[in-house]
Image 1: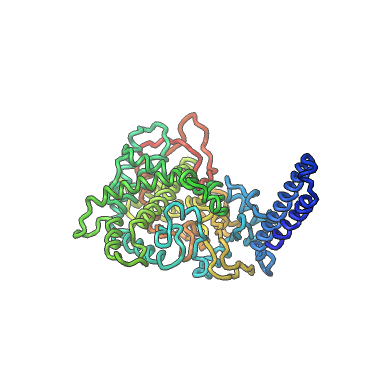
Image 2 (image 1 turned 45 degrees about the vertical axis):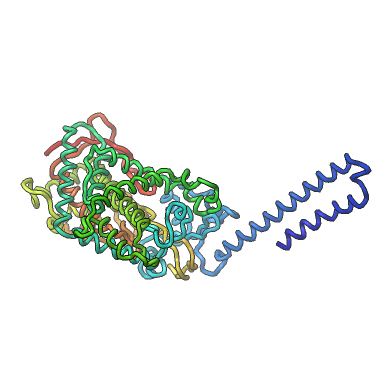
Length: 534
């Protein structure tokens, strides 16, 4: 500020001397030229002052990079950091190149926000398990605050680590268990939905079709059963609308504009910009509001909860008058949105990968079907109890998750105090990105990390084994709470479908690619197949 005052003093002094000499009255043309010159000098001085000020702020934000033992990384640009060089179309590959160049712990700058990328199984486990309490927080997301998130209404996925998140995590885990997770009741619901999915596959009578939409609808119905105690028919327009908005919402949240709004929050002050930047999010939340209103009209508070929504509303009533409680109607919609997104998108994408890999590896498909015939047969539906006697099928499902690498970068964390990872200092308040892709593709752990190879999960005797580096659901305090449900769905849907159908590449069509597309999640390149009844 002293520099700014001095700059203005310097440009004011000549102007005052001109006036004292009466130049304005004696020579108007000369006066106008002089004033133009002075205006240019003033603007130049202000521009220099602002540039110096921004440079000082930038240096202040990156001063921690000069500290001893701070992680190495590419040199950031003033104000912009490393943003101009980041490949947002394929961040996993960009981070792979950084790991090869700088090692398992890399320092970056997102505008003025410091970020550290942790790669490799040892570094990720050290950060999330050994320092679990200190890395359980989430970084601030300014854009989220403009979309309905607040101190006591943060949902589950992006919630800051504190009492509100703990309260919702405990509630969600216990409620899902009460609703049948890990019990026969929910298992039967999933198996029945698998039957509906199989019937929809059979309607195509062996003709080529894309399974993506049907898989989305089947998995969405499992989540809907837990949240709304209902299922949607596959031709329901509301279901189509919900799935379309979920897909668009995912693309919005992984886009460069979302990154810019969070690292340059001043842009959010532009009236109406958050709504224009996230139209799918706004529309999806409006659709959830309609479903919640419809659901609330049929709720009987004197009856046991039918689903998670009823259980949450019961807690809202208990929490009335308690401003510290996270049980409120605003948070209900956010928790439901998180459960739909996390519980539906990743599981359906994994199933889509599983079926793609079966048509690309018919020998593996045949071995799975042989094991299904020997253990289950054709006379009954698969059960979770069968999994223990099906090592090859279990290995295939786990290898699908490893190879497909659905959530390559997890959800960002933030350090709540200084920590030490692999000998490097990560200061308090640093955004922490865990490169899960580097763990699932680590060449030191997996025999053929970039190939689909179910033997990664089998020992020499053909028994199922799970290496410690298998962490598609992340690890630590913020590990995915829906992991048990996802494991149940993957096994039951996969075995039910392969028990009933053989899958193949349509005649005359090229072999589909096993290279995925990065859209926050890694999804298969669109493909078609034929489902022929066995």
